[in-house]
Length: 236
Image (cartoon, rainbow, N blue to C red; front, side):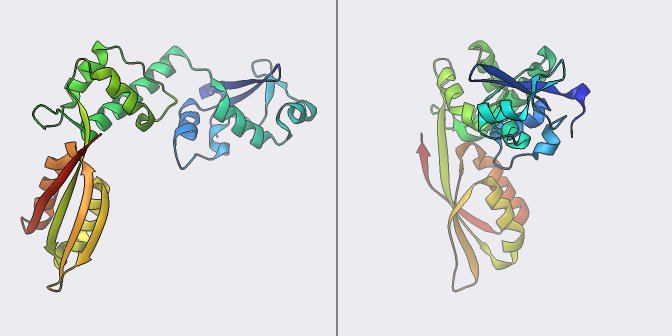
């Protein structure tokens, strides 16, 4: 449970009434964007719903029932977290936006290429372009959900294209154990099989910007005992 000193207010106006809860800003953000949500007990500073959090004016069961159809504080808290407005200090918002900015830059660098020379854009180039077009970062939306919108904003000043690559990989059985997890961390294994000679073969789809890192990883883990072939690249 977050301390009150570190908590901010999340509020939701419903049927003309305001309801508020004390939450951790960082965990509230993760609750909105992550597939695996943090526990409510970790997010809430106080397991209460207020009419006015600063004054400590608690909402009654009757008021909760009328507005939400339930008097269960935890169920109401979920609704406020999903649909409400989270109040941040200027410092908190700046910190969370900067963290989200770094995530977005990393995503774009990994998933996009320069269509002119077919190479990834360095993170610094993406960052400068984002500053030039004055991209607005939403601290409460996931980096993934913002990436495509930001790419559209960058296109007038930066040649950029989302692209994936399908790569066939073939290696000896002895390398399978140390490779399979690493390969899956780069992308999606579309197909895999074992040859009659005992070799492992797979086709993996990865962000085009990660090709160099992917090939370096394969050669490092197998000491060069690996065969690869680029099958195709798909742009979006």
